[in-house]
Length: 528
Image (cartoon, rainbow, N blue to C red; front, side, top):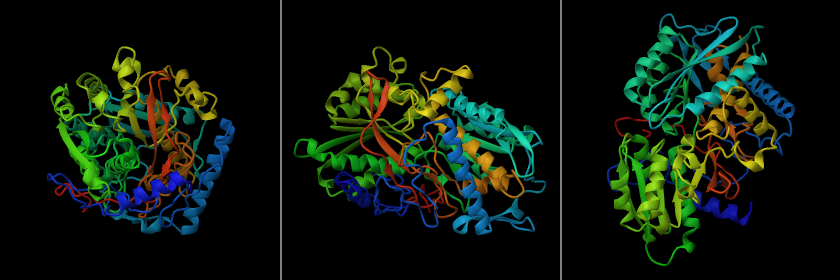
């Protein structure tokens, strides 16, 4: 490990030492959750969890799509073999499902009339998703990219399972406007009227409205656009899983970054400012950041000022003006959607952009494409130099990546579907998640009995593959009850207005296998 890597390892080990997923301290009554990271050093090498078969992936990115497909074929075969060697799957009496590292779920508790193959025909797979296609937190580009990936593999005939059936995916989307009140009836439409095989959801509050029902109904539930630690709960919610870096992990990385760069600030107190949403995820990330600062060896130097904003607030002037009056030297934000560019414009007008040496957007702002010139208006200068903790890293708009085999394929495929790859939005996240879904459908189909709901969840909870939208050194895996998070790595990036792209700052940090499962308690707002 390099000296820089050793320094990061020490900072993160200190910050994660108290991460029991309950209390590391909070001075204002907010949730005291720090993160779902269990502790241990971070480095750019793979670090699989207990029982994990995590590998470092290929030594270099494949140089053609054929090489990518050959790699994924090999990885899927290894997962199938691991499952067979472990003797995992549905019991002979059909009453239980077992998997890696003690994973088990009681299928006998599924409702009367439940079917392993509902949503499947001999030729099709119905996959539904409720997400925000309109409103200030809208992410239509995510759905477009997911659909593009699923359609591509449908056209290739890739969803052929061990029973000999070859299917295509029928991707059904429903718009809840990111309004939690609108999510339940739309989920009901998907599972009761459309009778989908699996039902995706997006955003934390929206998913909380329905994930108990989906688990009680034994319906696979991939969660997009939310890094809430609750989605890592294989014991109580075995049918749900997340597709984003945990918010708590993101906050600890902010703190570790601050500690590492402390020498760049003048002596004495360093004023920190945080703008966060007044909701469950906002409380998690603020409490996690506070907890890191509280245990930092530099805690005496930090003066944290924070303001909260409502999810649907059309303006941010008041809380941003209050924070600007403190002349912060370090600024972090946790807002999303249209609030991301609004916040940056406010920072440019009220002085935060000048007073703060480092300014961080929330990772969820990547979904909104918040830094593009078209989004912030004018020449885009208000977005220049902002930082982000990116849980993936590959950007198909990056000019330096245009000759990359997968990036070229992704751009060409989006264009063939009538989409503009350089448009504002989150094609990157949609490609990452759409590829993962396509692989899960293929992998589950290769298991004994072919594609079923139980085999789909078993496949996902044993996933260990090379996601092409992640940088080298960023792992993509789960392992039963020991490792319940697909994404646990990140890279620091800074926005370049001139190049209109996020530029990596340093190597990716891998925390794969370091996150404890989280049995989220909605009453106490922690992991139990």
